[in-house]
Image (cartoon, rainbow, N blue to C red):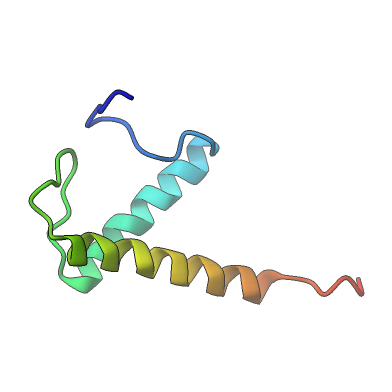
Length: 73
C-alpha cells in the first residue's frame, strides 16, 4: 500500500462526495480545535484523530436517519 500525502481514503466515492467528506473533516477538526492540516498529520494524538472521525460518523448517521424513508412512499 502506497502512502501518498496528496491522496485520501475516499477511493470508492465520486469526486464530489470525496470533496464533501474532506471538507467535512476539516470543518469538524476546526470546530473541535484539532490542528488538522493538508498532508502529513502524524503529530496528532489518537484521541484527536479519533474525535474527528467519530464526529464525522455521528453526523453521517444523523443525516442518514433524517433522510431515510420507511418504505411507505
